[in-house]
Length: 233
Image 1 (cartoon, rainbow, N blue to C red):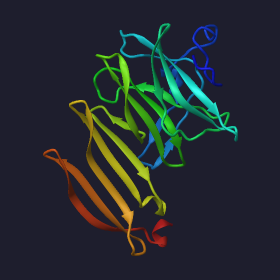
Image 2: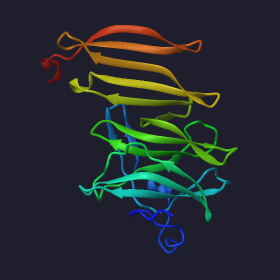
Image 3: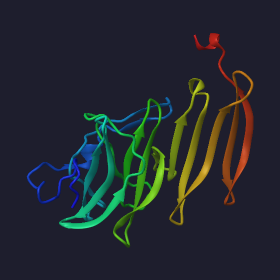
Image 4: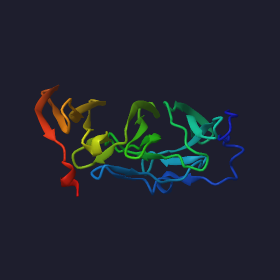
């Protein structure tokens, strides 16, 4: 049993409310095309509950939260329960602390398109970019395996691609956009578009890499001129 602040044991918490993740993340939205990201949700549902498939077992999740000296909160791990049995403990990787009244963001989402709910937990959020820890559900083991920490995925259900976008400086002229896909259970980078500053003022280098016959190759390379001040009016 955890005894740290922010985590309640299932027995002690039985009388408290339990919110389902569908409502918990109803306000989560991504607007990557506009290079902006907005997240909303509820924190400390204790437990959050996710049904892995519509007819499958329901799992409960408890946050092990640390309150830092500056009052900011960070989740160190997530305890996974099925009924009264502890399934596993998921380590949260390098979470940026959030103010005492700011919410955590956690949800179940099928990122590998196998019909089972996987997990997404936001570990950092800036003005334009956000990152998350991801865990993939393994049906044979009935547990979650850590996938990694990535920029928040935009899920393309029609192409089975996961897209990320990170905005840099220079008014968004510096950026990186990636596309991932699962193959044989592994997450592969399929396409990467990166634009970065050069030594020339207002000139940027763009490089696109794509996976061709299993190998990531440069398929496009060019220079891009940024907007002149008069063009921004």
